[in-house]
Amino acid sequence: MSESKIIIADDHPMFLEGLEAAIIKQQPNVYIQAANNYLALFSVLDNDGDDIDLLIMDLRMPGATSETGLFYIRKRYPELPIIVLSAHDTIDIRMKCLESGASDFISKSIDVNELVTAIMEMLSGYYQYPNTTMYQKNHISAELDRLSSLTPSQFKVLHLISNGHANKNIADLLNISENTVKNHITAIFDKLGVTNRTQACNIFNQQ
Image 1 (cartoon, rainbow, N blue to C red):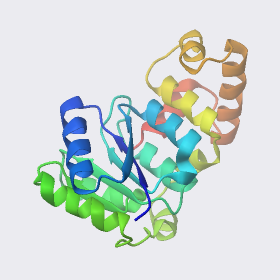
Image 2: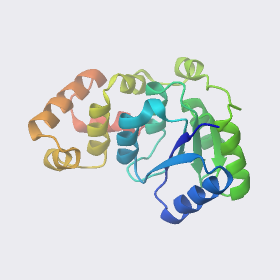
Image 3: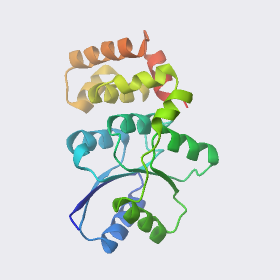
Image 4: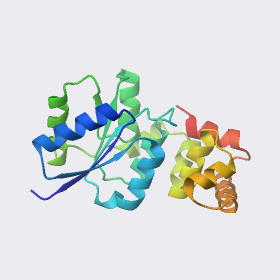
């Protein structure tokens, strides 16, 4: 079996380390990259997204209050298998995740051996691509769907705006100029059909 590449995105270090160790114990020929927030996850995907075999992500990482990040990732990587892990296992959250593009939704309360088995099965191809087309037609608002038109850089800027960062801080975090940040914000407003940060954040954070 050739080397599989996995991203695990989770902001709990002990859970992340434990899951990495459990996966490698069962399948040593796995390369794992870690991310502890959405901004780091987007950066990893920007660099290696086309070579990733599986994304395992915690829905509620810092800076995210809805399924927006999952929805955007699915739109950019329509064939990437995605397992969503969550400590909040309710029917509503489970359905929103599956409808937003998750290949599978697994509660964090599951036994780690069962979780690793599910991961190995997905790496072997035992999953279905999510039917996001039907979801977009019946559930996604026009405003939320416009998020998919944003470039990766624009989405990162919007993500940081929604978390209350000023232009200078955004520039520092993304290693770009403030003028570039302003240009991104202008493009974001135009694509989302809004005129201010509050309106843009409302679209980003809508449930």
